[in-house]
Image (cartoon, rainbow, N blue to C red; front, side, top):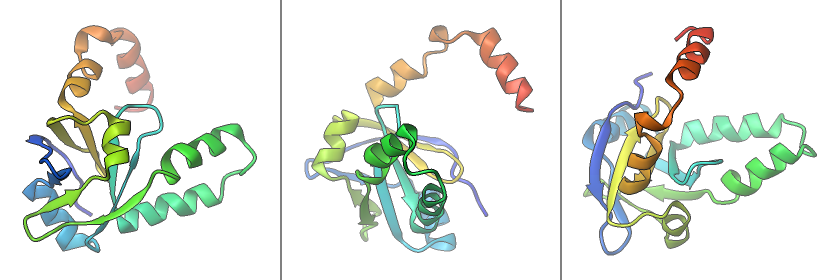
Length: 150
């Protein structure tokens, strides 16, 4: 299965629509149903866009978890509860609901990022702040990634 990868800079139009980059649309139209799910991230101030099939896998995984755990409750309240089904229009855009744009702090300039099985949608300022290499402990991150085999 092809993976979503790459980083693209776009803008949100006045109606709240975002263009899905053509390489991502190609993956979606070739390998998935055209329905997508847009939802909040668990911790970061961004949105996730899942193809329907990947969203269904995530829902099934959540169903198998102990439902009384506070972490599971939080995940369901933050991610599952905010999910909205959207479809790509003929111009390759999706409409991001106003509440989700507010949750992610999306203004005009955005970054769309491939994340293998999903797409992330960030406000450009937030993306730049979170991904500033000067703000991470490189040695610790390198050690942990090495321990994971990366």
